[in-house]
Amino acid sequence: ADVPAAIADRARDMAGQAFKALGCEAMARVDFFLRADGSLLVNEVNTLPGFTDISMYAKALAAIGIGYAEVIDALIEHALARHGVR
Image (cartoon, rainbow, N blue to C red):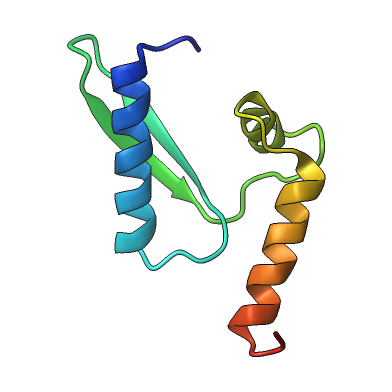
């Protein structure tokens, strides 16, 4: 959905806060409700979002210029670093 930049920025900030508060690692999808007054409400934090190259998660990342292969590489690097392999 097209939302004003200020609301998108607020959603990104809130998503990051929710991610950290819940101790999430690597990736999660944070879903919001946008109220009529412009306020945001976190609906859910999904730590296992659908993640195929045709999923909404991949499409959302592509919309901001992050490719599917790039995300897979970053997730692998994160996992290796987390387990002290790199």
